[in-house]
Length: 148
Image (cartoon, rainbow, N blue to C red; front, side, top):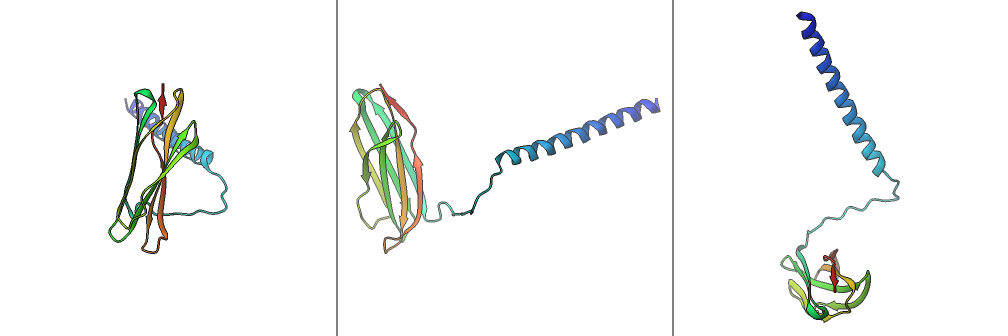
């Protein structure tokens, strides 16, 4: 009876050791797959001046797209948003928010497009200081819609 208990403990230890080894090799293998040589690393804080960066693209009947881009920044800074409408990955129209000294910038418009293509928005959200210098910039994409 004592031999069977010892065999069970030894078996459990062997399984535990194999599990640990496979986990370690799995992690090392995953890290090794994604490792690549880079010349530099630039770390930039996100949302240090921006509060919100929103977008919406809606497709309606007749090839009508409803387009919305909105940027909000912290008090004391100026917001801008540039909205690019892309057809199959190529920019076909661009809108910029009005050039004002406010904390909220938005573009809200409608545009008619050709059917049978995919559309998305490329948005550049920016926070500017009082001199117009860019403090933070984030580029985002909307969802893709197919207009039939």
